[in-house]
Length: 291
Image (spheres, rainbow, N blue to C red):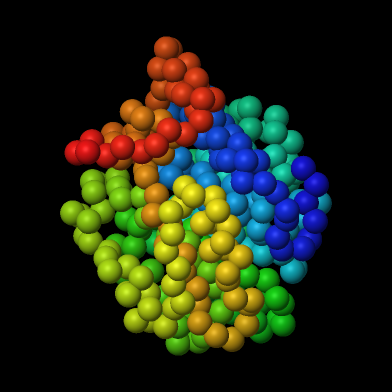
């Protein structure tokens, strides 16, 4: 794929849906190489990653350190297994580099390493740090007179970390309009349902109380995702911006949707083939168990 250096590219929703399916399919493949993988928390973010990298972000794979590129911080770094294939697909490195994912000597681990992988702007590990890092990157852009935006993708369980709210308060205080938080509100964290472990609602009101501009939408509806991204204000002095994406953890594979035991797992044998066939058939409507 040829990517220009202007934010926003004219691609169809059908193409983005295909790229979201590619994210899920590659997550399944790479998990088999590793012997385990973070399926469900990557699947919930598939449409978000597709819209960002194929339709919205400003970057140049031939110049990974281009100073005016948009920055992307994957604070929920365990979803890197879905980001790596996208970076390869758009040209940051050859797709074949992923064939030894997590094997000895591979630069590609369970969490991304910015010193080893082109296109990675932040080395994540322990959750909760991404918004602070993104705030620093955005402020650096302001000082340097750059017009890039800094995007930070957080999981909703990660919002239990106090450092997230310290960063949110600081971003509002310093009026960092170039900072965009994207919350993958997929309802589950590794310990259980987010709202039972430590509730985060009313989420929009909490961000607004710190001076953020908020948008909430269905994170699997590509038209809604694109509209939210297109509606962002340019970088500069103003309100920081948050997009709350309501998603389904495990979306796209029925056995994984809102199932806690697929946060980390391993598909083998017929199960592996069945899941690939299900993904190839496309998304079916999500039906809650209680319905």
